[in-house]
Amino acid sequence: MGIAACLLGLIAATGSTATPVKIDPTPTALAQAMEGHRVVLLGEVHDNAAQHALRVAALRQLLVTGARPAIAFEQFDREHQSDIDRARRQRPGDADYLIAQAKGDPGWNWKFYRPYVALALEYDLPIVAANLSRGDAMQAAINGWPAVFDAETIRQLGLDALPAELRRKQETAMAEGHCNLLPAEMLPARARAQMARDLVMARSIRPYFDRGVVLLAGNGHVRRDIGVPFWLPAETARSAISIGVLENNDDGSMPGSAADFDTYVVTERAERADPCTELTH
Image (tube, rainbow, N blue to C red):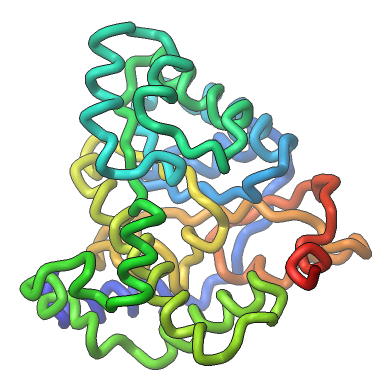
């Protein structure tokens, strides 16, 4: 994808003025929102158990209709694809063995993600290790794009001349995600690491466009304006659906990020300690 195609992808991903569609937090409503889209970017708040239960139930309903998309995981790093494929050959249907062989990061709560793996195995769906590893993302942050991408990729994608608005929005997202506690000089590097992950996830799902693919990733990665859709080919970006799975604000009001998605669903907040309090101690 050259610079022109990349910019066309940006226009396709961000140029729509359509009002995002809110759907009911039910498996049927979520399955219907996914139905008919070959590329589904399905967001999440990682530690929200209710959201995971909703998404698994919706995916099962989608599969019952006959859809057979690949399931791509932010939770699996791309270098472990061969481990996933080998685990399936060695012990078909064993979700726990697959997760162990794929070196699932213990930072993820695997009781939330095992049901997706089990569902993919039950229906014999491709399981895609979609993410850039933490180590490679750190290299991109510290040493720039050449630490992860070759010179031709950097040239084709125009990584050294990305739109200022994309960089600004990513830096704002990084600041807000860290409770506005990061020094300003750290934000460009953090934003670059996030963009590198989005780019790798977009590339990881490309082989599955024809059969269909559902990417399971955090809401920040599936944002229509700056996430994975930015890096998709223009035609695919236009037809893909970005679904935010959001939480109510503490006061019960609508999340302000709803406008970043094509479709969104709002659930109750998970009980958790205030992460900003933890970061300040």
